Length: 110
Image 1: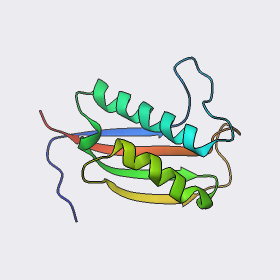
Image 2: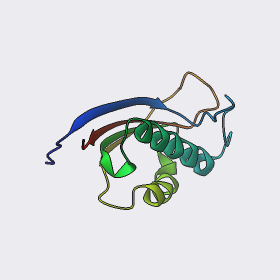
Image 3: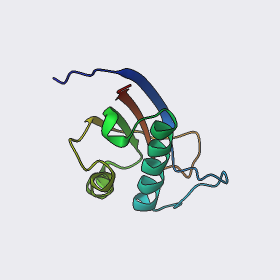
């Protein structure tokens, strides 16, 4: 159990879409996970927080066999206390090139 204090921020549907609208790392879970984490960081920073403020993530993946590769990347971005996390394998995303999608909840201190 974890207690969250502060302003809640709900971030949904972070995918491997780059700023130019293309999908980063088609077929490459490591590259896509990096892009998703960078997109999460940008969203939280735009709201005045940091990745350390993220308390929970829901991770949707096309292949559960990518678990170790995904977590290796996540550890590079979530360097403090890791957020509570659930990972679920899904059969499809809205874009056939997506391999991963993450939703997050952050508690940003004002």
